[in-house]
Amino acid sequence: MPEVLKAPLVVEFPFTRSLGPVQSAFLTGLRERVVLGVRTGDGRVLVPPVEYDPVTAEEISDLVEVAPTGTVTTWAWNPAPRPGQPLTTPFAWVLVRLDGADTALLHALDAPGPAAVHTGMPVRIRWAEERTGAITDIACFEPYDGRRDEPTGHTGEFGDPVTGIVAAARLDYTYSPGRAQTAYITALSGRRTVGERCPACRKVYVPPRGACPTCGVATAEQVEVGPRGTVTTFCIVNIKAAHTANLDIEVPYVYAHIALDGADLALHGRIGGIPYDEVRMGLRVEPVWTEGARYPDHYRPTGEPDADYDTYKELL
Image (cartoon, rainbow, N blue to C red; front, side, top):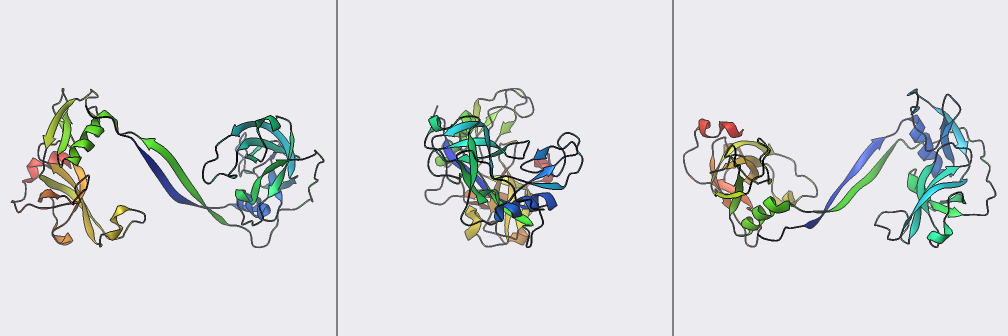
């Protein structure tokens, strides 16, 4: 049994969001060094503001300026900041109830160490030197002597308001494919394709998942399938996807579901060696490997007669 594989994986994409009048005023205010909350029907001031009362679900839009000073309500020390976090040196994550607000705002506190942080400590906003209308316009919070800064009474009306934001969403984690897919990937390195057979229904699943998705029982019996297979269905790709390994592939090209001989589940792969408009259901194909590759680069026609529809209809 080979060692179970694991590797770092990053999922990242830009998230574009349009803003309603409340969020627009809040972020525009940060750009102008003004902190705005919103008042609910029972008089509470929420910072950061929301568009609907979390208790009554009523729409709320009564903007209220609060002070840039406040009090730490709870905190946690971050000894090893990650890329993209507010500070590059160790800091505290804090919930701060700004003076004039009834809820707390999450941000970073620049402090020399955890011994310098405590619940109830007075803090104030340190503004970023360059502000664009985003939560990062607050560079962080910092301790201060406790003298309250009074709001200026801003109405929330701004020229050139911020109407939308683009936030980078990123998730870094370590992925392990588990026992079954480790065996599958290991076999691919030897240019073999291995699935697993369900002991109950006897279907062979490729790639294997370690359990039968139909019967719900564990699978362990390995079965080599292919290398040839049948195109069950396909699509024609006309637009290059950004940030993928397919950037060097000229469009249009065909991406297909391929039922390898002996498998009861179709896997996907690119079809090459044939004009895109000649690819069809039932086309018999075989893998094409490139030097040093860990999986087939694409599949090409074998020259065999097309498979009969009845032989693959259950795999569509």
